[in-house]
Image (cartoon, protein in one colour):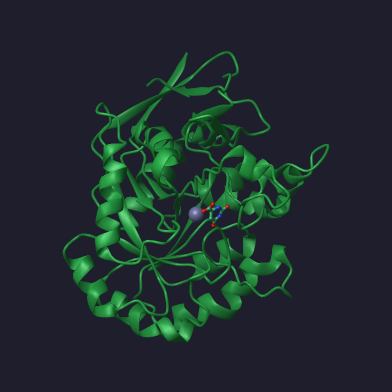
Length: 346
Ligand code: DOR
Ligand code: ZN
């Protein structure tokens, strides 16, 4: 059996939700990852340090004793966010980063930002103190085709922010297009991007295989194969500007398989084996550690994890569990449409 050993990975973008779902999903991430940046789009959202600290405690309670895992907390940027409170919360370590959702762009984003100009004073403060900004990069205008919303956001909004504040640390999250890879590659050194396993594994055809597939519906929506290829190229390139953010986003199956199904793919459980397989398929295993265990920490100026993990290649395709249970409900676990032979023993 082939075996590789890499530095323990980090996941720079997760949704843990709250209550029963939180208890069910936190161990799926804490099993394999050392740290995660936790998204604030709860209902109601995490808007200040006090709420973030309480939420962190609820997450910590759900971490199994055997795992050592650190949640890094974020707050949800609104046009009312107070820059002085934010500065204090960052300096005392309560909040790690700020998330910018354009209002209405995705799940629970209604209180997000409508007019970027209104949050520029907050962004200026963040640039001064070195606090990272995480961006859901899609415009929300109904007239803009859903497949173009990331590209238009880059042209109309991101470019404005980057030009005004080149010293602001920005992560363009879950990028999905070749335009995004190019923009980030050519952008200033503080601009980086995260990429999800599902956008690396699937193109938009996966939404319509023998019928409609709500479990592959996420935002930004899956794009054409040419875009997926650009993402793979970026992920395996060794370029420090690209790293893993799984955007693992649990929703109960009844909420996905509905007349208005939620956006989000729950991928925490098999994310590392799936990525290993994707890199292996491209003969790029030597870049896996950079993408999942190094580049993010370098951008966020954190230590690289000391612990190592072993990943094994089995001769037989791995059989994935299909669901995790949440009381009487369930959450579907993401599995790609290609065989996976890699496995983490834990
Ligand atoms: O697919 C997604 N699901 N994209 C997001 O941006 C949010 C997430 C969620 O919270 O469900
Ligand atoms: Zn997300």
